[in-house]
Image 1 (cartoon, rainbow, N blue to C red):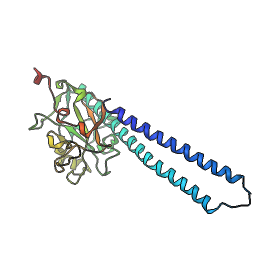
Image 2: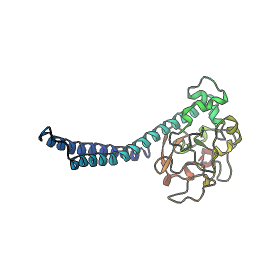
Image 3: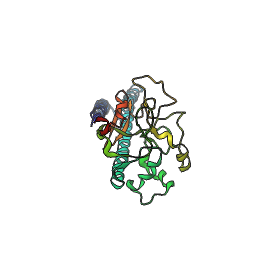
Length: 265
């Protein structure tokens, strides 16, 4: 996919660092222990020798911990992409059963797609049991809905109601869902009632709903898409059902606009 190689290169680099650190540290400690075994068995370790061992262990930990932390975040990002891919495929299946229509507004999609995500019933309160709706990297674990939906219409207004999935000229390049922003201006949704009260906050349909480019952050009160949930960007699901990582610098309105066939004719 478009940005997968960047993540894979980072993971490979982290693995190389861990391997190199282990080899070097093991060699140093082994050499020290071998030298110590040649001494009299009645002689204890000296303070300097103990300090050398402690220093090597501390050095090893200082190298390993950042690499392990980075690997952990990459694993969480992979889970998030998997979640979005499953939701994206659920939307495609929903469209097949509903005259090619996909949902574009509020939080109703969260309930409507449940039967396509392994659930046998469609009880509203059950949506909180669908772990796929939760990104493991979201800072607030109380949030029950971690993704926002594409409601883009014409840069001035949002679409009302579902849309025909066949109307999108480039479904593989048009974002359908993305990581929900986190901040004091974003309500925490705990249950079905709050989901209905704040359903509009899931809609993305204006430029200021997107992360500002580069390191600029000027739209705190309006932004709805996460700017740095994973590395320096977010994950997204596309209208063809696939998901991928999207760096903040590549995020633009063009990735959200419908670009329908009728507009090209």
